Length: 261
Image (cartoon, helix red, strand yellow):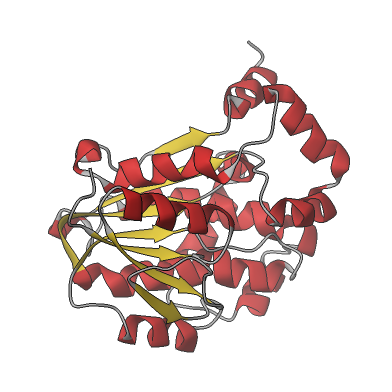
């Protein structure tokens, strides 16, 4: 489904990003990876980059090709770096890269954001999410975290709440809509990648083990990558502004508990 397409994958050196790049190559795509360190697996091209600052984003954009078909925003941090850094990378850096990359995306292209079941609370925290999304440009992340009293333990879920809201907004705003570019999200549950250990430090073993127990097992990167790449494909040409839970049914469990059915 991806034969002949060129796909950018951030966070390409490990976990979900590495598997997404590997599968995209198997499906016939050319892959350009972005990460802070070189991936072990061979890909068509690699851009060393850091999403935590505007300067870092600008450096990545300077090395993007003139045209490509999809941007997979897989890179992210667990929250162990603190709320400010987490917001900067998981939301503001991702958003800045997506907006700067939009003119390079071909008509009918796609942006796929990797969010999380941890962002489930965006509706309950809608006013905060709206405020965070409403901050223009690439703001001073420590100032934003302070202004909205986001402590370090909240950094990860809050960053994903903002990302889920922005995904829906961006799907119907320039510069994406005007170019026929679709913007969607994938929300994994617990996935057995190296970052899972960090999530245990952030959320605690009881929360992580409870989520895994609710659906029978932790996911693996190979569970998530096909969903990301489907949203990049022409098979998803009528899917826009959507969030696809890829979590073994965890969102359904949370819905049942939260909504009481």
